[in-house]
Structure formats: structure tokens, C-alpha cells
Length: 330
Image 1 (cartoon, rainbow, N blue to C red):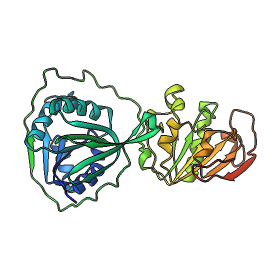
Image 2: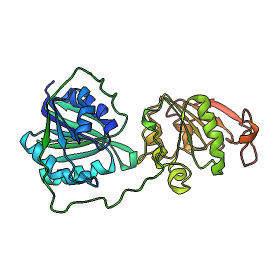
Image 3: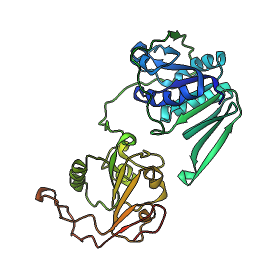
Image 4: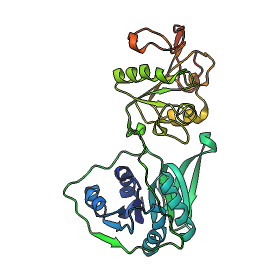
């Protein structure tokens, strides 16, 4: 299997470098890490790069898009493939680089293969209804990788590589952050969770999230949600939204409570090894994806302590069935 001469790696989230490096080392003869500041360079030495390039910030309010000209100059010297995280900031940076370098760009890639020196990238299309496989013909390529696709590379504490600084090339129009405001953000990364409990429109009141959190605690699980709960009702953080434009699960278990199972949500949830669905509508699409299905209302007092009794009348679960993934459930 042939390799590319150079693979470049950049992330606006330092925690994602280990995952990006897993594929980079597989496909590249030389792997160059691009980082922001010397602190990141020291932190990431153990990941096994051949060289670390430090982007020095000219301001604490610098945005990553402003590094497009600087990174473009690096890639013009050593042509290759740039791997980045599939975040809003990285995609914006990638768009600028794609124009400046006349390079192919693929966003939210789920897999990348190399055949006879030619890159192929697979990614979701049409809101997750289909997968597309792109053949990348340009000598320069930019690919943002969807989270949870690769196991992070193991660290090697004894590894050491050269660290160099890149001369900052200012863009014609810099995008600066005028002010930073702290917000309440969940630190959870559902793409790495082993068990997830997801809630949807079947949850009637925000206070009822307490019983869901208690169930998740018993299961050793994280709590996620469908888009209406995060962006419609604003009951949960955006980071807990599971779906085509949210988190893609790779968990061992996904327990859904009151989620209908629309395709936009199941694009994010269908990666779980086992899906257990509870819904009072026996014709809900979720049962087409579930491994096990429970027909009934999620508002049941069985096993729920008095302080967490739900706010709605209770309907007992009426039927349970095993639903082969992709087949009809009860």
C-alpha cells in the first residue's frame, strides 16, 4: 500500500489530535502537526508526529480562520493532505484554504482510504439519507473528520520531534473576536460514551429530566436528546443533541425514551451497537432501528422514587419485542 508524502493535522480542539493522528500515521510518510502555541506543542509531543509547527497568536482574540494564509504557505512547500476536526471553525478555515490552494475539500468524512496513491473519502449526504464516496484528484486535499471514527493513537512519552514556528501571514481581512463571554457548556463528549440514554418529544416537562438523569446514573450512562429538546425547548445543552448535525454515537448501548426515530436523529444514533427503544406508538419509526422495543409510555412509576415522580398520568408498558436491526418491531 502506497502512502502520501505528507499529511498535515490541525484541530481547534486539542483533545481531538490523538484521534486525527491515528489515521495520519497510517497514510502519511511524514506527519506534521500544526498547533496553536508552545503549550500545545509540549502537550502533543507524545503523539508521534515527525514535526510540530507552532502557529503563534498575534492576539488573544485571534480566530483560526486568520491562519489560512499561513497554513496555505506551509502546504505549498510540502504538498499533501490536511486532516482537521469537523467543527464550525475548522470547516470555515478549510473553505478558505480550499480556495487559496485550489484543493479538494470533503466535510464530515466517516472513512478515508488510499488506493494506488489516490485518496477516497466517504461522507454522509442528503441529511444522512445516503453515503457518498469522493475520489480526490487534486494534489492538495482538505478533509474534516467526523468525531468517533477512529480510536485515538496511543501516546509514547519517549517520543521527541522537532518543533518549529511558522511566520504569521496576515489575511487581507482579519476576523477578530471582539469579546469572549463565558457560557454554561457541558463537558460531555457523547461520541465517546459507552452507554447513552436519549430523550425526545415524549418528555412532557423539563422537570422530568431528573428521572432520566437518575436512570442514566443507575446505568452508568450519559444523557442525550433529540433536536427539539436541545434547540426547540432548550431543555438541554447543544452538545447533547444526537443527530445528523449533532453527535454521532458509537456507544455499546443507546436507550431511547419517547424518541420517534426520524432519519435525521437516527443518523446520529444508529452507530450504537445495541438500541433499546421505548415509545407508546407501536408504529413509531424508532422500532425499525431498534434491537429491542418496548411499547408503552415512558411515564411509569415502577422503580422511580417518590421525589422524581413524573408530571403526567401514567400508562404502563404494554408490549415488549425483539426487533432485528432494520426490521419491523412491535
